[in-house]
Each structure stands twice: as C-alpha cells, then as structure tokens.
Length: 298
Length: 324
Figure 1 (cartoon, rainbow over the protein chains, first blue to last red):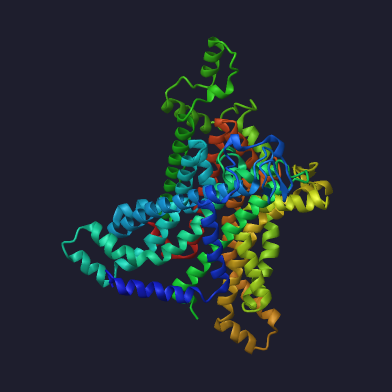
Figure 2: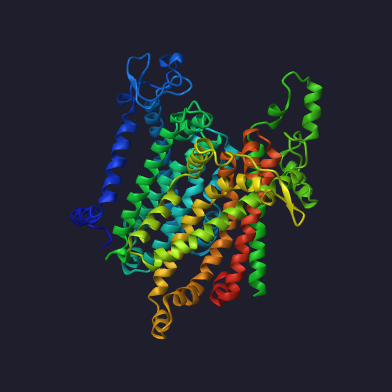
C-alpha cells in the first residue's frame, strides 16, 4: 500500500478513467478545457494578431463590429476594441494569462498547503495547534478579503497577484491535507514506516503523501477555477493586472466602460470565455469528486 | 466555561493585534504615500510640513503605536483624499452597504431555502436537478460578470431599472435608507439580486443536503405512519430539524456578504464601504485602507468568537477540546 508498484498505479488511473467517462457532461467539460488550453498556449500562432504589439494596431480599426474585415485584410470575428485590437486575439492572449496565473497560483498554494498540513499532522503538538489555528482563521475569512489585503500591501502586477492568490488559497489545501493525513497517520503502514530508521521527509513524502492525494486533486481543480475567477475579479476592480497586461478580467473591465453603448462585444465575449473556462473546470472537479469519493458511488 | 471564554477572548485579541500589525506595516512600509498626495510643484517646505502633519517622518513602530493610541481613543486617522476622519467616512458609507446586504440575504434565504427543500425532497426529479445546476452556476460564475449581464439586460436593453448608484434616501425610524422610497427600491434591486446569487447557491446546497439526510430519518417514517400529510411532515418536522445549521450559516455568511459587497458595489457604483476600500486602494489612501481592513478583520474574529461560544454552550465536547 505504501509505495505502490508501477502496475497498480496504472491500474488505478485506468479505473479512474473508466468511472470518469460515465458522465457525458464531464467528458464534454474536459474536452472544452483541453481545447481552451491548446488555444491559449498556442495563442501566438493561432490568433490573427498580436494584440499587445502596439505597432500592429491601427486606430482606424477601432470599434469594428464582429464579422467585419479590418485593415489587416482578415475578418475580426469578435470585433475590435477601442484601440483597434482584434478581440478574438485579445481573448486568446488573455486566456493564456488567466491560465498561467491560475495554474501557478494553484501549484504554489498546493505545495505550501501540503507542507503545512503534512507537518502539522506528522509532528503534532504545539506546531500543529499554531499552524492549524492560523489556517482555520484564514478559512473563516472570504478569499476576496485576504486577496484585497495582499493587493493593498503589495500593489499590482502578475507576481503580486499570484502571491495574493496563494495567500488566499493555500489554507484550503492545508486543511484538506491535515484532515486526510491525521486519519492516515494512525494506520499501521505509517507506524511501521516511522519505526524504521527512515528520515522523516521520506515517510512524509513517499508513504503519507500518496495516500492523501485524492482529496487534494479535487480541491486543486476547484481552486484553480477559483484562482482564475478571483484574478479576473481583482483585475475588473482595477486592483489586479493593469490594462497593458492581457487578462480576461482587464478586458472585461475595459469593455465595461462601453456598457451603455451598443458596443457590447467588448465585454460580452471575454466574459463568455471566462464563464466557459470557470464552469468547465468546476464541472470536471465535480466529476472527479464523485469518482474519488466512494460514498458518492452508487 | 469561564476559562474557555477567557482563552478564546485572549486568542481573538492576539489575532486582531497581529493582523493590525501585518496590515499596518504592509500598507505603510511599501511606497511613499506622500508622493501621491503632494502637488509636484510644491516646494521643500510644504512637502516637509505635510510629511510632519501625517507623522510620516517618524519610524514605523512609532507610527504604529501612534495609530494604536489613536484607535484606543476612537480615532482611526484622517483620510488623505477626502480630508475627513476615517470613522466619519466609514460610518457615512456603512448604511448603504448594510441595506444592500440585508436585502440580498433576504432574497437568498426566501428563494434559496424553498428551492433547496424542493430539490432535497425530490432529488432525482428533473426540477430538482435543474435547481442544483442553477446553484452550481451561482457558485462558479464570477459575481462581477453576472452583475454586468444584469445591467445590460435590465438597465440598458429593457430600461426597467437604473444601472447604478443609490436612489433617493428616505428615513425609516430615523435611519436614513433608500428602502424608504420606491425609487430607492428600484436602485437596490439589481445589486441585491447580484450579491444574493452566491449565497443563494449556498443556501440551496445546504438545505438540500439537510433535506436528503433528514427524509431518511426514523422520525419522518413515524410522522408519516401517524398519518400526517406530507406538508406537515416537511414543514412541521423536517424543516424544524434542519433549520439549526441553516441559521448558523446565515450568521456566518452575514460577514462574508459584507466583504463580497466590494465587487457588487463597484459594478453598480453603489456608494458603500466596499466601493470605498477599492477607491482607497486605487488612490493609495492608506488610513482608509488600514482602518477598513482592520475593522473587517475585527468583525470576522467577533463572528467566529460568537459562533465558537454558542457551540461550546451547546456542545460540552467543544469546551473540553478547545481548552488546549
């Protein structure tokens, strides 16, 4: 159980996939995410224009309706914005920024959360009391509030936003890890591993960690969606990424200024892109939870 | 019990103090607020006078203790942008936020609980599933985006409701509120619906989970065996049993709705404290930032303290474990 061989791991993944694909909605959501990821990270090749290369922009192209052909000779399928930026290109570039921020914040929060949760559960005592008290306190406050505290302290920019998201989200991972690890710690295989002269980090990472991973995967999917939504919210409020950084939130924020005109495509399309992304990730997370949680199996 | 209350009180005080230090140092240590405030054409003497007026020439720890001493006297400092006391500023904005939060929590409860009851009573029906799908949407779609769609639909396209701002303010029992005028209600309805959607999703899920669990319980079987009608079973027995966790969450969510109002207030240009904090971050109005954040932290610590104490009163096991 403690260090599963390669075949059992592979079997587990195969079984997981068997269960996962029973839901057509979750399959569709997964496909949507794969397509969006490919489009976002291939945006430099896929999109008709580099929307943040000022030399490529032409002021005469400003506010073109969706479907019109611009001075570049290609169709602006989703229209252009006030600077003559092709909206489709801007959305793809923005999607990339959103994914990058969401994934790196999620990965960092996961790492820190695991470290905090595992060491609290493994070492126990005062360390556990102090660490988990801080985590509980943070969980009692809404993420947006913690993110605002961080933004107020750090200012704006990609690095600052990622840090703010990590501070706001690591506690979820820490609590989940701690909860699962406390249960696992009492089991025989951990006791056995601890009674050998193995160093603590080896017991922690090779024996304990693999067995607390399933609930963490669920939390991770939900938190990546949460990070993307939170970044968009902060950027929309004007305290996240500046307008010169392509993010879905800053695009929507820019489009919001034209909400009283008929130029709705400036805000509608980036908003739809954001909504599809966040909902798709959440649907995948929901199905992963159903598959991994034996209580929900029929 | 007394020992438990004292420990918890001490812990809360330590938390508030620690957070105030983090926020104060974090906000003041980075950047120089004077650069934002001062007219670039000002001479050295004017600059020096302003720095001394705000105490920015003092070392950070002395500034912090000055801040604490003033807080103890009820003085949270002076806004660098509006040039009025922060206490005055926050209290002038607070009624707007509170009325928005009140209306939206009411909407979330009045709609969310019945929907959750139905979804939990018939979990496999089409309507039950549709309600759950709706709650997932309310959970995951960002609030600001829904707010924008509401403005586009009901204000810009249909023209039924105003797109933002607070309506004329009347007075109910001497409290100034826009809920006293029909125009005020027209202004409050869209932002309140926007703010309520997330909470509604939460209410639906909680109520549904409670319902599903309770409907399997023995007391439901006995109530049915007694020949009670379904309506009496659900509303007389089940609802009564699942209402305790609902009320707890309701209380806890009050605080987080105030924090979430930041987004809705910005979208709808609602002149509450949430809009104030965003404006103060954008304008680097540090006294307002620090005071708002510290005040909200105090609010949350107090809510948690009350919940802890109530639980300890109800469940002796919490008391024993919590004394550590």
